[in-house]
Every structure is written in structure tokens, then in C-alpha cells.
Length: 261
DNA sequence: ATGGTGGGTAACCCA
Image (tube, rainbow, N blue to C red; front, top):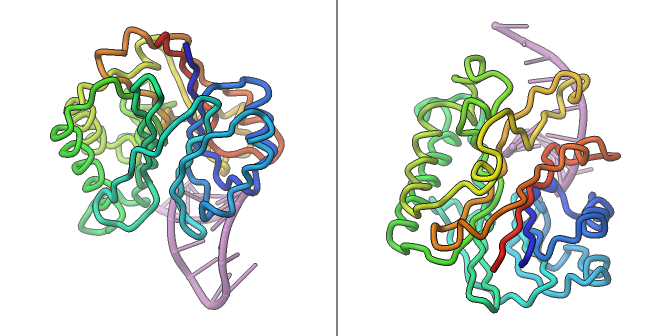
């Protein structure tokens, strides 16, 4: 059995102590981070190494984006892809000794206007998702887990108000459709929703709310998926809402699952 | 309808 967590950390250097706290409190075997906002060589690994996370793969760039996988279990680098040719560090993969591959994604947020004619970033987000679809279709992934900040809340109960968010980037029908096509192409099973099939679930709350907890205008942007051959091994899904209340928090909280493999 | 708060970097980019 191993446990896996995914967390958009919004700067791993600024929030090194929060990462260490999660690793201490929850001790997942594997932690996938997004928005590390750091070149790989400047990620503060010593504190994580001291907590038993001696294995590490990452991709990074200066100031933006960045993905990393910290692991207590041995992992090997399984490569990356530059989806949509953006030149961004938004994907990295790792392979465990049991043959399970873990993909860590940071899908583009897509800007404010949900129209690719008016907003290049929205088009790039859709193109990124289309290339994910094509890659999953070509690769036919097996024994694989994919996690990350997908920047889309696909279901009505993944947002505080389906109606009010239909034209808001992250919950528009075209984004949901593109994400669904990528999910279908890899036959990915949403492990969080396998475990928690109904009810409101959020993993992100805006920094801009006066009182994020009271307003509770959240969205489920962070996901854990698995291929059908291992999906039934996934269980014990959790979303750590209290982490949003930690001092100087990320706007995202960790999402966890366990796998009996 | 608008602006609200963060992070990075060193003018404004991005979320």
C-alpha cells in the first residue's frame, strides 16, 4: 500500500515549512507538487530529505509553473511532455519499482475570458487538454496514476454555484468537454469521486474572498485519476480543507488517496 | 459590473 498526495503549493520556496508540515502530519509516500515557481536546482530539498523523502524528480523554470514529485519510495524519472508547445514546466512523470507510473500535471489556468478569439491563454488551455487527449489515446496508459492541478472543476458539485460559474473559466462547458475527452482517452477513473461519489467537494478557494471559510466559494480543481486496471486499489480519498487555514497558505489544499498495490 | 489578494521578479507577468 502507498499513499499519494497532490498539492498546488504556489511557490515551494516560500512555503517550504508548509510542505514539511504536510509531510510530517500526513506522511504520504509520494507528494506531487505544482506551481513550484522555482528552477529545479533551487528547490529546498534538504528539509524534505530529512523527513525521508530522498527520491525526487522535477521540472522547473524561473518564476512560473513547475512540477515536482517527492517520494519516500524509489522512483525513476519517466520523462515529460511539452503539451501545446508552450515551453512551460507543466508535466513530469515518475515510475515506481512496482511498475506504476505517476503523471503530475499543471494545466494552464486559461486567463479570464472564456473565448479563444479574445484570449490566447484560453486557447492554449484547450490545446493543452487536446494534446493530453491525443497523448493518452496514443499511449493507452496502464498501471498509471495521474494527478495535478487540472484547473477545471468538471461537475456541478465541484463548484459552489454551477449556474454562476458556467461562464467562468474553470467550469465552462467547453473546458469540461475537453477535460472529459482527455479522461476518456486514457480511460481514467476519478479516484476522489469513486470514493466520495456525491456532495460538494472543493480543493481551491480564492485569495480574494474576505473570509474564504465563511464564504466557501470553492472549486475542485485538483484531481487524482487512475487507469482501470488499478482503480479498484484506490481508496481513502481525502481533501485537506484545514490546510487552507494554515498561516500564509496556498490557495489550493492537498488531495490524497491510498492505493493497495 | 467591478475589484478583490497573492506569488514572482524587478516592468509588470501570472494565478
